[in-house]
Length: 259
Image (cartoon, rainbow, N blue to C red; front, top):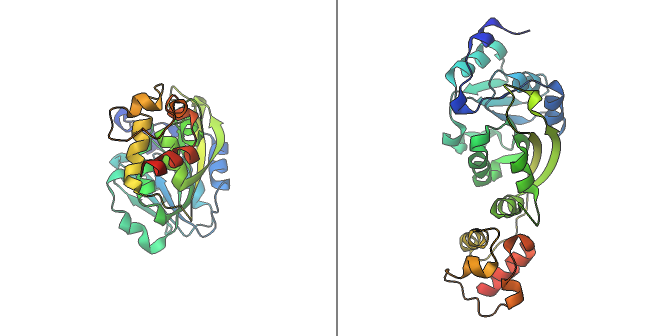
């Protein structure tokens, strides 16, 4: 049933609103996580298509974050129940200490394309509060995150794989949304790693990785030549490689030699 008020609310381009309309996609999102007694976060519920299905599950609670006041009000009026709390807030601006009491949390969200990476970095910053989740992202972004070598492999791949386990789920066509986006999307499952090996001078390491991939088609030598790193101990063969030709273990080994 479509409520009359739903039809009256205008979609706002500035928020990148593309609402999911395919129930099979929602079912796959929910089936991929342990939903029983879970504390669930939804980001950008919009018209509540995913919200409704989450609330039909035996969850402990659902906290939904909606930046658009019209849709926040609609969700409250349409799906109000004791398990649901709606926050009219930008997820990027919230104080994550609010999640401490009911951790660990499960994320289920159709992420706005233009803020996908800022949101994922927030997940990283507060990963001790998160157990697992499924997010809908642009297909190109999903492929970049799970890459382990070759074209498309870069800083984002290395960084997010270091802290989370990832798994590609369904590829979603534009027709699954209203209005349809211009690109394909992908369901992406993640789980927070319980043990992350320590990296010597970790802050320096991530800066080093960014330099290695500054120009992906350039060799390591050309990317690093203007940096302060001493490359004297490395072979010409290694320095002639591109970052995309190396994996995380090889990059870590180079970093350890630089220390």
